[in-house]
Length: 116
Image 1 (spheres, rainbow, N blue to C red):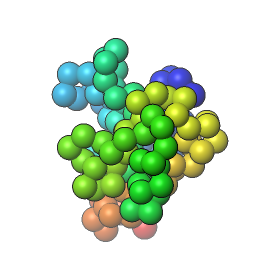
Image 2 (cartoon, rainbow, N blue to C red):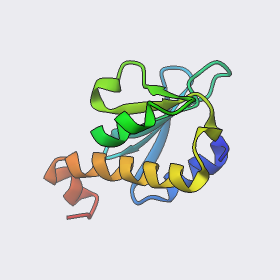
Image 3 (tube, rainbow, N blue to C red):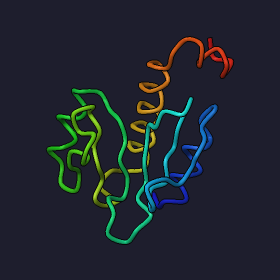
Protein backbone atom coordinates (compact mmCIF):
# COMPACT_ATOMS: atom_id res chain seq x y z
CA UNK A 1 0.00 0.00 0.00
CA UNK A 2 1.17 3.52 -0.65
CA UNK A 3 0.60 6.49 1.64
CA UNK A 4 -2.49 7.71 -0.24
CA UNK A 5 -4.13 4.27 0.01
CA UNK A 6 -3.36 4.16 3.74
CA UNK A 7 -4.77 7.67 4.13
CA UNK A 8 -8.00 6.77 2.32
CA UNK A 9 -8.39 3.60 4.36
CA UNK A 10 -7.86 5.35 7.71
CA UNK A 11 -10.27 8.15 6.78
CA UNK A 12 -12.90 5.55 5.83
CA UNK A 13 -13.12 4.47 9.48
CA UNK A 14 -15.88 6.21 11.50
CA UNK A 15 -15.07 9.60 13.03
CA UNK A 16 -11.41 9.63 11.98
CA UNK A 17 -9.69 12.97 11.57
CA UNK A 18 -6.27 13.76 10.16
CA UNK A 19 -3.82 16.55 10.86
CA UNK A 20 -0.17 17.31 10.29
CA UNK A 21 1.82 17.75 13.47
CA UNK A 22 5.47 17.92 14.52
CA UNK A 23 6.47 19.22 11.10
CA UNK A 24 6.27 16.11 8.92
CA UNK A 25 3.88 13.69 10.64
CA UNK A 26 0.38 12.95 9.38
CA UNK A 27 -1.71 11.85 12.36
CA UNK A 28 -4.89 9.78 12.16
CA UNK A 29 -7.04 10.28 15.23
CA UNK A 30 -10.34 9.38 16.80
CA UNK A 31 -11.56 11.57 19.63
CA UNK A 32 -8.28 13.53 19.38
CA UNK A 33 -6.26 10.38 20.22
CA UNK A 34 -3.87 9.03 17.61
CA UNK A 35 -4.00 5.47 16.39
CA UNK A 36 -1.62 5.80 13.41
CA UNK A 37 1.06 8.23 12.25
CA UNK A 38 2.56 8.45 8.77
CA UNK A 39 5.91 10.13 8.21
CA UNK A 40 5.83 12.57 5.31
CA UNK A 41 9.56 13.27 5.11
CA UNK A 42 11.90 11.19 2.93
CA UNK A 43 13.91 9.87 5.90
CA UNK A 44 11.00 9.44 8.33
CA UNK A 45 9.55 6.18 9.58
CA UNK A 46 6.91 5.40 6.98
CA UNK A 47 4.05 4.38 9.28
CA UNK A 48 3.56 3.79 13.00
CA UNK A 49 0.50 2.40 14.72
CA UNK A 50 -0.73 0.94 17.99
CA UNK A 51 -1.17 -2.80 18.43
CA UNK A 52 -1.78 -5.38 21.13
CA UNK A 53 1.17 -6.48 23.28
CA UNK A 54 1.14 -9.92 21.63
CA UNK A 55 1.08 -8.51 18.09
CA UNK A 56 3.80 -6.01 19.02
CA UNK A 57 6.12 -8.85 20.05
CA UNK A 58 5.34 -10.74 16.85
CA UNK A 59 5.70 -7.78 14.48
CA UNK A 60 9.03 -6.45 15.77
CA UNK A 61 10.58 -9.82 14.88
CA UNK A 62 9.85 -9.15 11.20
CA UNK A 63 12.28 -7.42 8.89
CA UNK A 64 11.41 -3.77 8.26
CA UNK A 65 9.34 -3.42 11.45
CA UNK A 66 10.79 -1.91 14.62
CA UNK A 67 9.49 -0.62 17.96
CA UNK A 68 8.23 2.90 17.30
CA UNK A 69 10.44 5.67 18.67
CA UNK A 70 9.04 7.35 21.81
CA UNK A 71 5.87 5.20 21.97
CA UNK A 72 7.09 1.59 21.84
CA UNK A 73 6.28 1.23 25.54
CA UNK A 74 2.62 1.71 24.56
CA UNK A 75 2.96 -1.10 21.99
CA UNK A 76 3.42 0.99 18.87
CA UNK A 77 5.36 -0.42 15.93
CA UNK A 78 7.03 1.44 13.07
CA UNK A 79 7.24 0.27 9.48
CA UNK A 80 10.47 1.33 7.85
CA UNK A 81 8.97 0.43 4.48
CA UNK A 82 5.28 0.45 3.56
CA UNK A 83 5.78 -2.91 1.84
CA UNK A 84 6.86 -4.58 5.10
CA UNK A 85 3.34 -6.03 5.39
CA UNK A 86 0.78 -7.19 2.81
CA UNK A 87 -2.07 -4.72 2.25
CA UNK A 88 -4.73 -7.00 3.75
CA UNK A 89 -2.73 -7.54 6.95
CA UNK A 90 -1.89 -3.84 7.24
CA UNK A 91 -5.58 -2.90 6.95
CA UNK A 92 -6.48 -5.36 9.70
CA UNK A 93 -3.73 -3.97 11.93
CA UNK A 94 -4.91 -0.40 11.31
CA UNK A 95 -8.48 -1.42 12.17
CA UNK A 96 -7.20 -2.99 15.38
CA UNK A 97 -5.21 0.16 16.21
CA UNK A 98 -8.34 2.24 15.65
CA UNK A 99 -10.40 -0.06 17.88
CA UNK A 100 -7.80 -0.17 20.66
CA UNK A 101 -7.76 3.63 20.86
CA UNK A 102 -11.52 3.93 20.49
CA UNK A 103 -12.12 1.52 23.35
CA UNK A 104 -9.91 3.60 25.67
CA UNK A 105 -11.72 6.87 24.93
CA UNK A 106 -13.67 8.30 27.85
CA UNK A 107 -17.38 7.44 27.77
CA UNK A 108 -18.24 11.11 27.32
CA UNK A 109 -16.12 11.31 24.15
CA UNK A 110 -17.59 8.08 22.77
CA UNK A 111 -21.10 9.46 23.36
CA UNK A 112 -20.17 12.67 21.53
CA UNK A 113 -19.06 10.51 18.63
CA UNK A 114 -22.42 8.72 18.77
CA UNK A 115 -20.73 5.40 19.42
CA UNK A 116 -22.14 4.41 22.81
